[in-house]
Image 1 (cartoon, one colour):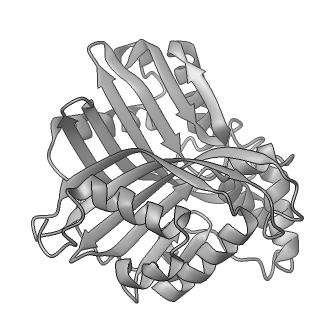
Image 2: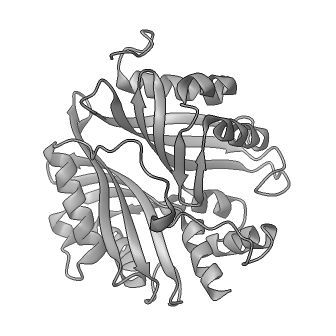
Length: 322
């Protein structure tokens, strides 16, 4: 890797290594070394700009979850053609709610949830980031539904008129990284299949998924087989039946020992005018920021990891209702 610290052997070792150093080794100040000073970081609940803001947020999270571990399940990456790279890092986190903070008074609850971070890196620094964490899984383990926690957020922020708006497609800061990924066929295959699953009423899940597929879904839910796959996507599709589906970034890879994989960042933007995953139709304008990973086998998609923030979606619905 050109212009990266030589202690990192390759792109995944860089991503896994700095993540451990910052979070588990508690070297939060190293964010100034590994993040550019003006980095934009987008997540479904909004965005921040600058490494100092990221440092403050990281310190607050560690205060609330001091024993958090970030188990790197996979790093799906692509070369950017300019001496840097883009990575989609899937993390399985374990943490205990030991401190007071945004989730309320400490409960001692032990949590398990996933995060996917899409990061652009060059010259030993992350300079652009998109981050989705399974907030639905976190709040469910703490005794809330996503709708309840969204209402709690709005109240804590001073009500509907003063609440922080979730990330909407029109409010995102301009991207610094302008790449779209790579041309590996597994990435394009998965992007096409996601489009069918989200927009087509007559999609045949048996043509996409292995019969024994395992799906890791928002809220910490796990699905198995064709029926669970169909049920999940129908719930999304019927909630936002006229929404626009967009693919923003696509990576495909075939690495030794890991097989065919794909990482796709996508969005759905439209009106909540149907029943389904988000309750009865509200007419709310909704933007869903999603990142998904796929692993293929000889009989189709055999493992799938889909992440979006249910709380951010419910917040948009509740703010529309007033």
